[in-house]
Amino acid sequence: MMSEAFNGVWVIENASSSWSDGNFPPDMRLKLWLTFRDGRLVYHSENDTDKSQPVRTLDYDTPLTGEVSPLRGSTRFDSVRVRQISEREFEILEMLGDDVIVAAYWRFSDDAKNLWRWGVGKSPEGRSRSYEELFIRQD
Image (cartoon, rainbow, N blue to C red; front, side, top):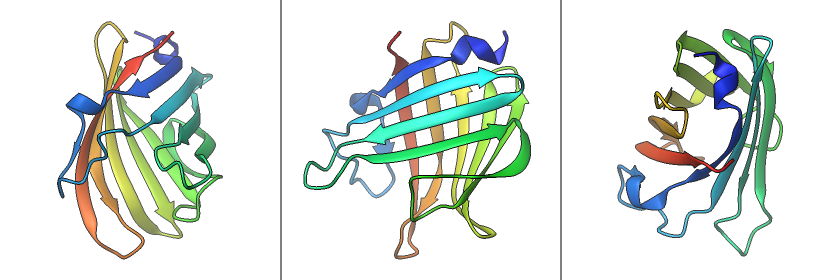
């Protein structure tokens, strides 16, 4: 399967997602736009879970070879590294300088309708928690 099969809009499925600290928001609203082409990933996300805050976005365009690329939309991260591990698996490192803030593993289902993300993220206070998230393709 070519990674282009994963192009589309993905929405988090809250009932199947969790954080290790037990504080996963039951009303989480997170949407991803993924475009794989020419050995690159173009990523855009929007999180509007907290209605008292502006929509949080994250954007990057990076090769699938693990090279460092700039990341826009976050004060927590300034760069990203994406490495394709297998036909359906990817490693994503979101970094601030040379410090890894989020280390994620992505795996797409055989039919390219589900995306599982899991990993470890560090809060602005320096505390780490693991997470697992299921996304359902919307298009």
